Length: 150
Image (tube, rainbow, N blue to C red; front, side, top):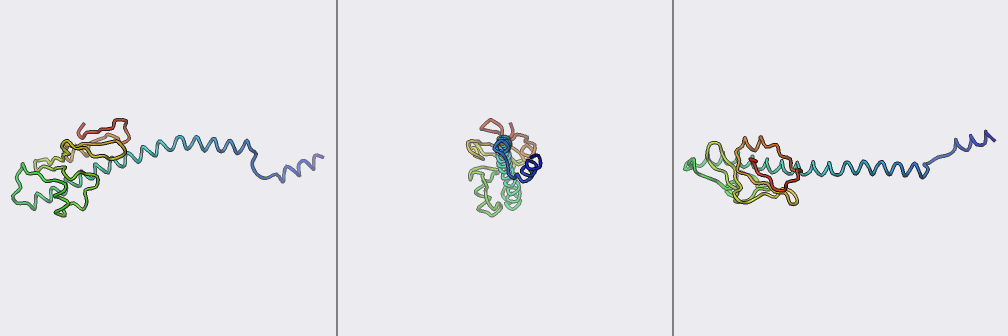
């Protein structure tokens, strides 16, 4: 009898219902932890992409003001002018009316407009290149409107 039982147990293959349920519960717990974390990473990357667009606009404005011999320290240029003049390949998430001043240092400003970077979250700028680079806010933070500088 003992040999028969050992022989049958040796040939058993597959999972019991309890083992299968345990695996499903573990996968559910992992998914519950991972999904919010991934959402935060996506929001942070979209926020950082808008900051990169602003930095690109400032660098494009530098070229614009070098080419424009009539530019003074009070001159400004819009994102639309930079795109139209081929100084900026595309505006990304920036607004056409966002401006960059020729002051020293250059200031990128959205004025009263805000840039929507994800869902209902926005950011507004009135910042220099250094202030944008030093910004340590996260796109996934709870507040829906960010300002650079704070």
